[in-house]
Image (tube, rainbow, N blue to C red; front, side, top):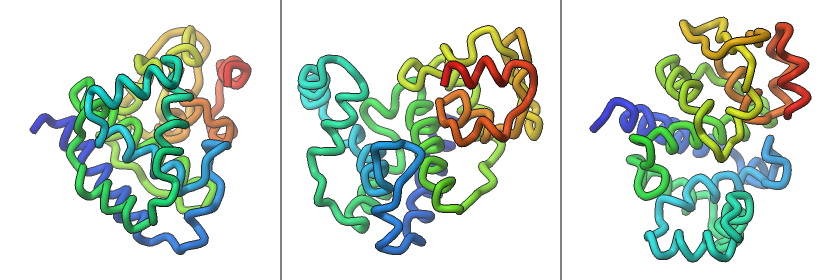
Length: 206
């Protein structure tokens, strides 16, 4: 098992453990994914692991090869799944499979980390993300087309103030690694936690 796959597995295990602490009311609460509740975000997280190649192709065709539409189709496919079923699905697929195993498991790590924060932040359940996971997620985010972080961060120097990590060149954007990741992933809520001359540029692209 590669080091990144192990990190993705640990992130998913932590995600499942966190979800088990939620009350029934939490599952219908809003998240940083503006159109999705907690239940829908978790449904999205577990969706791609179970898809066979031909199912993934069919979903891509039905979604017009647009990731946002593909994601919406996945969420709508089984809207009645209970919290216990969704958590069990994560626990059954701790090790990335299918699309989430791409790039050595980095897709699963990035997706799981961001979406856990999408849920935790609005609910007021902060966490200290393990540093090794954050470093890998930040590095991969800049090259992961689906989240468009590369476009938002283009021409900016990103500096994580709590990690030994920086990347890029140009006007600087500084902040905690988690806030920096969420900001370049397009989460407006994190922009107030970063600073520097490049922040206004990043905000204009979010």
